[in-house]
Amino acid sequence: YKQVEQYMSFHKLPADLRQKIHEYYEHRFQGKMFDEENILGELSEPLKENIVSFNCRSLVANMPLFANADPNFVTAVLTKLRFEVFQPADFIIREGTVGRKMYFIQHGRVSVLTRGNKETKLSDGSYFGEICLLTRGRRTASVRADTYCRLYSLSVDSFNEVLEEHPMMRRAFETVAVDRLDRIGNFWTIPHFSCTVE
Image: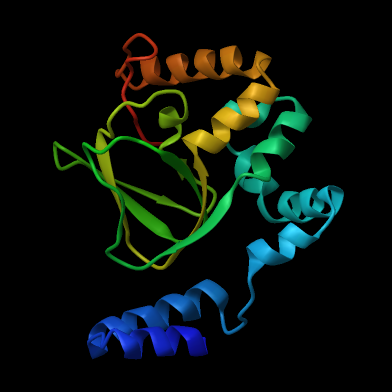
């Protein structure tokens, strides 16, 4: 925390921006400062998998793409998740950008905003941006944080790393994704389908 204070002072950041940074750290660490990546990096693989499973398995369990997946595949995906915090009014995803991550909402509420000014609310246990795991298409909606949001993200690169170890899962994921796009009326042929949100 002292480093953060020194950093803000060194760059002479304005008071309102410093306040936002203070609030970010307060919500991210809830008064307890630690380097999670470093801690997990020192643990054995089985211990790391146990911790990540405890923290995230319920989030992934809600997602049809993972519902009937090989448990080893799911565990491998869980180890790739990254914790992120967004503040109210932050845009997590912007329409028109290339999709590079999907998100699971651990806690908080977001608004999914589409071109036709249609707004959908998502909260704890929901997910969005998953179609982008299988395509480099552009986002068809923006997603804005309504409250402080504690999310876990899965990057396309990390997902592809796991698929290399579990090649049979790719076909299953493509089938679910095509079915999902077909149901929401956005079906195009893989790999040209669009990135959508739950």
